[in-house]
Amino acid sequence: MSYSDTGDVSASPPIPIGLSLLAADWAALGNAVDVVTAGGADAIHIDVMDGHFVPELTFGRQMVAAIRARTPLPLDVHLMVLNPDRHIEPMIEAGAGLITVHLEASPEPDALRRVLGMIRAGGARAGVALRPLTPAQLLTGLWDALDMVLVMTVEPGYSGQPFRAELLPKVRELAQQAALQPMPPVIGVDGGIDRHTAAPATAAGATYLVAGTSVFGTADPAAALAAVRAAAERGAAATTTPGA
Image (cartoon, rainbow, N blue to C red; front, side):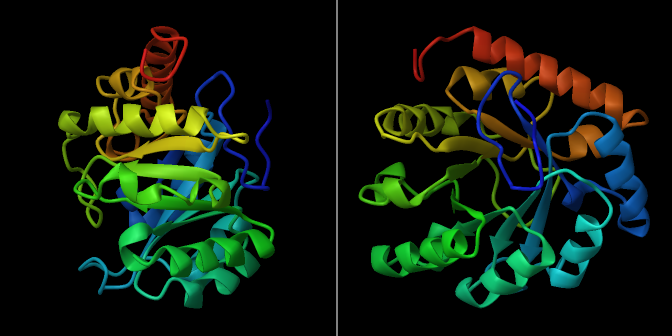
């Protein structure tokens, strides 16, 4: 399938890969976006941090708008913020096609459902991210409101952390649950994705990967992205059903 600015990162071979600008050279973000756009990325992943939900501060809506003007790729905006409802409309106006909020920032199911509804009502796709220690079971009753579940395989807030392989059963559990839905959401994995960890992630059922340091931290990002993609496809080919 093709990928457009609608935010569609639905699973279809090859496994779509988003590139996290958190790991890029912030002094040359435009060039970083150009390089991975030309190098075959499927989406640009933008981590928005407010200094409260996580300690760091990063990008805002003006940066999202600037990146939207720079690339035709979908913008996958990951809100690591408190009070995510305040950011939905500005991010959609700036060009976000997929917006992911943290379950931990809206722990009450009704509040989270309302935020997800705001995202969809604005024309974007709605995702929920889970920190490493957040159990998958907390999504029970919310699957119909989701377009993606993003499993964090590192603690959110910093790039370059190692992949936590002990979270693969959680990926598998969520993939199995997603497969039972009438409209199965994407199962994304974010954190420590590289040419070694991409295969285990997709073998566990991940249908979207977010890579960062393993691509931007190399001399040849396009080649590094190709290596991650090849590994992801090997993992996906190793299983025909989630959790198999």
